[in-house]
Length: 119
Image 1 (tube, helix red, strand yellow):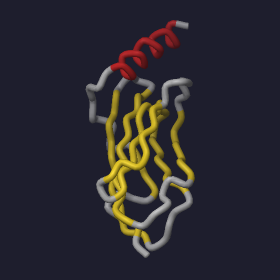
Image 2 (cartoon, helix red, strand yellow):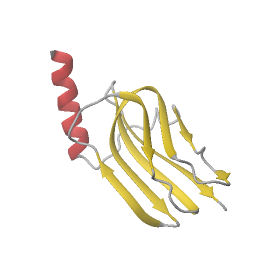
Image 3 (spheres, rainbow, N blue to C red):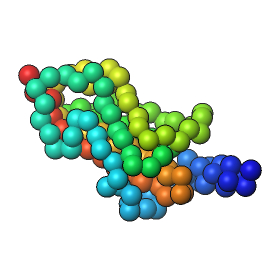
């Protein structure tokens, strides 16, 4: 019970804040497509995997510098290791994906990945 209450308190601070407190765990992730990669096909999904369970708060996608998707996740508190987004990569071009997660240990982590999809 105390663990749940503390998670709710941490999450409420996290969701209402625009600050990023910790970057220490940002290297503990893997994405597909990989960072700085060039792929020659349109992937069906964008995948983001963490070593430890996290809660996804914000997820924004830019294509050729234009914001095409901005998702905020506030309805359910679900901690998991991986997130997949289908039908996100619909066009060729240069992508930048930016995310914000909360680790179960209370650390807030911002991260981003860039890649290009060519014909």
